[in-house]
Length: 326
Ligand code: COA
Image (cartoon, rainbow, N blue to C red; front, side, top):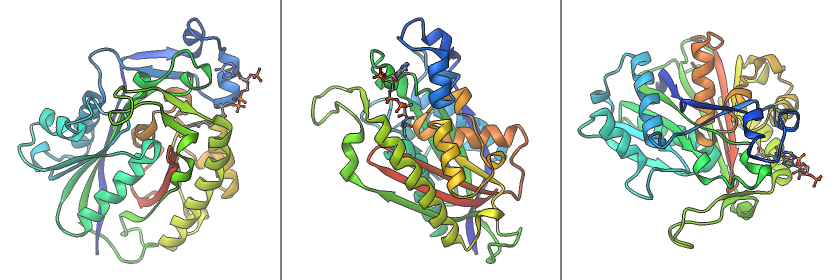
């Protein structure tokens, strides 16, 4: 059967790296508070010339090189972001132009921190229909531009960055337990808009006419995240016909080390199987899963043939998970 196989990963971070101690010079906070509550130690913050599209383009170049695929052979770009360069055109078309791809399908998806999981399911479906053969699936954000730097309860939590995958339609074994069953084995998405007011931006083109700033009820988000993420991971494993003990790596949305621990515990997964990069990157929203995946591929933790579960939850609420054999 045809499945969408990850043939390359890439990521990009802004040059400027800010420690908790540096942040504490501007914001009424401390390294101790941030580390204890979140596990975050550093975040990268975009400079004036670094944007969602430039970071995404750099991540794509790295992913294309890893896959050995030429940019001109890409026929689909799906870019997940809540912080596009402009309201329109889409950041996906900016990446297309920067990569010199004369013609392809290119669009953004918006599902905030779970945007990358949404982008993966959309691209996977489009590849499996046979309409497309080679896709770039991207999560890219510059949340530093929508943070209220006076609000210490949120501004310490986020960072900027981008991650990308090359997904290619390839022949793959039917039996998911077989090592030859490469690619995306199952995906599952959810949304529950009754929780719009838990995590949102207080502006937008159709309301205030301004960009707005991020607002969050942190405790409520935390509580929903643990319940929803553990449930959707179990759902996606059930859909694939696999069990949690078969998973080699969980690549979670990197929001908070305590959410990662609590979610893994609920599924009975040992912490050694969870890829953690939140300490280095903070929460990069839609970028966090592909950024963590690329980090773990490049440092040798994730190897070809490993069974991965990706998961994320974000504003909306939206949440989702995917199982794939890398
Ligand atoms: N530095 C120091 N103190 C801070 C602070 C900071 N950066 N931010 C908040 N505080 C203070 C608060 O003012 C409060 O003080 P008070 O008790 O004197 O009023 C105290 O710390 C506790 O605040 P609270 O918001 O209740 O903390 P918490 O234990 O819920 O932790 C979060 C806050 C944000 C770390 C936690 O709720 C969380 O991780 N939520 C999930 C957020 C998330 O992951 N969102 C993205 C999902 S995509």
